[in-house]
Image (cartoon, rainbow, N blue to C red):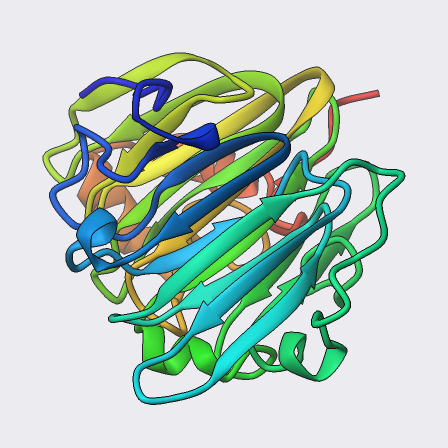
Length: 283
């Protein structure tokens, strides 16, 4: 299992499109890098059956045009932090504007509502002091997610904090793109073997297969990532913290499962019992 760095792609007018990531077997994302004043018209020839989310981590000002099947064009103002849901069969165009330019006069806020959500301004689903923050995109805050068939989240992990080991318990696959900062990631397979342990930084991309466990630790400057998840309303189980699955099991079961005496089981179970999914660094 390896990291991917989607840098090579098809040239657009003032940018580069990477519609196919070599490590993905499912077409659920793409990377579009537009220069200032760059323009890209993306149609079915580019994407084939591609659908998913576009997340804007660098664009400060821009416009997107989206044509859903058998519907009129919608022109959306876009900015840093926006995530746009794209169902199958859409035709889109994208324009990154210089900061001094005015937004396209056709861009309407009512077109934005229901199709996009700004992850930096949306209410937080998780907010742990000195640990991290999470915004989840699902059918509640972005109904179009149901039609797309995918969910997503933006996670901001504080410096030296750790994200509890966890996995998707509804068989979802995760595609994670590091937006900012750096740290380390570890992924363990269903057979208990470690399949990935490496340093990650802004621009890195990796996949967490179904039922694989993943954990991340941020470097001192923190780390942000955006994940696309192959179910619109994902459910995760964590192996540490207040909601840990180990906490729900009886001591006798844990002793038998790990082949350890009661005192070792007690030490194991007593760790990280009160924290949430993020563990702040020790004082």
